[in-house]
Image 1 (cartoon, rainbow, N blue to C red):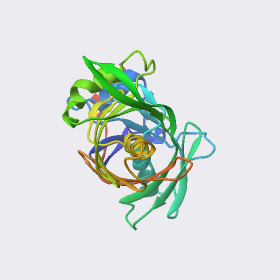
Image 2 (cartoon, helix red, strand yellow; image 1 turned 60 degrees about the vertical axis):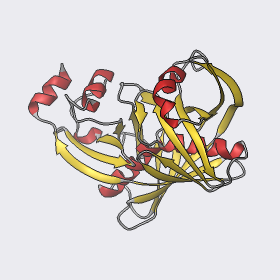
Image 3 (cartoon, rainbow, N blue to C red; image 1 turned 90 degrees about the vertical axis):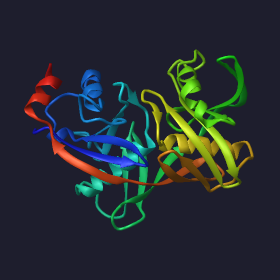
Length: 271
């Protein structure tokens, strides 16, 4: 229990990996916020916690936002965790499954270094499509869709408005559990560009579930057909959607560094 951690990034979305087998402090919301703090901690867009001890199946994880809240699912977090369990030998071979909230996520490594992975993200569920949503004096057209976590997808002419609209939509009364927000522009039949306001994290460079939700909405509304390339500020992901709204997500992962927390830092976390 030496305070070991790893850091990975997926299209600029950077995550801390905490393995319970080598971490001495329980992950309370206060601890999570300090670890994710870019000035006083390690810094990250979230924490992948696992493999969870005494779990069957073994390769199970939990994902925490930098504000200390737990997310139902994270596409980039799952991809990062998949790369970590492969790097460390927990997972064997080019195909395996990882688990979050008792959901199996199939993983397929697309190269020998596991830099590029394909994940089965589950099924999109549309709660309402292209409905009016008043925000900050504007009447927007919004789609509420879930892929295990909630999303609000809006086609918009100015993607930079994510900084103004994102926090207001995330906490709007119509979303009592808060929501992830995507502003979307259609480039062509197989390409969209999005900006992202992530629930519990704020503006983020990339998000796998956001890419899935935005691509699925573009297909549902007839703007695109599968496969859809999703351009984000941190890079590009590919989304495949079948006739039953099941999603396959392809994207990259890079190992950044690994380290051990100092005794001073562990004392801060234990306060």
